Length: 292
Image (cartoon, rainbow, N blue to C red; front, side):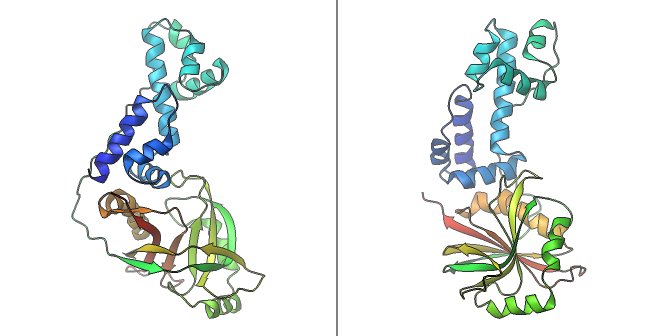
């Protein structure tokens, strides 16, 4: 069974358990990958975090149930995972714009249906993704860290304070510590609150990869030994880079036989001057083979 078919089977499992407890471990087993990877794949393909999708499906199903039966609101609330009618009413109103009681009283209430998702792989344009698989031992990212908000388009202004700390003297010292690939100053993202929800938080590092003991004045991120999928992006910055990111999860992972490990994601840029029309970057994603 291919990756898309497995994901669709996992979605069927979710659909069959909207009115009960969803075991995300079982969901991942059906999908044939880790829960982390399934969540990342789902969010990249569907454009919505998995938890939010489940919430919308439950509220959509609950609305249909309220309209076609005489069941009590409290029973529907409990059935779809809400501890009280008040909590259910708030969530219901946020999605549908009316309360469960108003939906019952109105002769023809205007509701928002959120249909179940299914995935289908479509080849568009035959674009080539240039990548390689690299095996690396353990190392550390040494530099500066900041908790920032995720931004999908354009240059993220929250990165400015990190970049400003990389004075020529500091950059030279950090580069002297670098003894493993990828070389040079790197941008590293990890500890995502929600990888595909714009505005959610993550830890952002600016630093170098090294196996040396760093000075205490720098922030340090230990990185475990892993295989890495390394993708090359060439084109106007940051659009070409953002298009490559989209392709990794929407096109490469579904057919690659690999899944992400949940480790930090590394970005290497060829220079601080991003104005070149053929600007070159590399994206490093820690991966492992999917067990079949």
